Image (cartoon, rainbow, N blue to C red):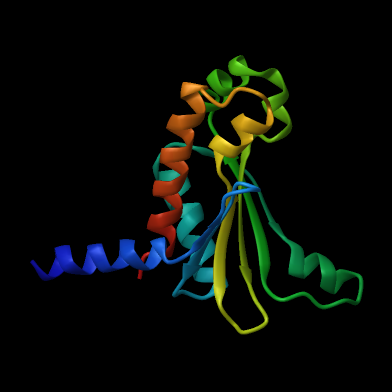
Length: 150
C-alpha cells in the first residue's frame, strides 16, 4: 500500500508542472538534479526501445565560448514506428521530429523537464485529429512523468 501511495505522490508531483496550452510546451518539475533527471530520462527512453539520436549539453557549449549557462541539456530521440504515422498525417511534422526533451535548471535552482506536446505539434501542422499524435502525446507524457518521479 505504501508503494502505491508513493507512486501516486510521484505522479501528483509530476502533474504539478505547468502545461502552457497556447504553445504546447509542457514543463514538469523534477526533484532530482539536472544530471540525474537527464540520465533517468535517457535510460527510460532506451529501455522502451527508442533510439537516442543525440544528447546535447548546451551549458558545456556555452563554456566552450567563454559564457555561462545554468544546466541545460537536450535529448533527441524517437522511433520510426511512432514518427512515420505522425508524418503521414502531415509531412511537415518532420520539422518537429524526432521528439525532444530539455532538462534545465532555473535561476531559483528548480530543475525542469520540458517538451513540446505532440498534440500541439499536430495542431500547428493542421492535423489536430491525427491518431498518431494522440498516441505519441500519451507515450511522451508517460516517459516524462517517469523521469521526474522521486
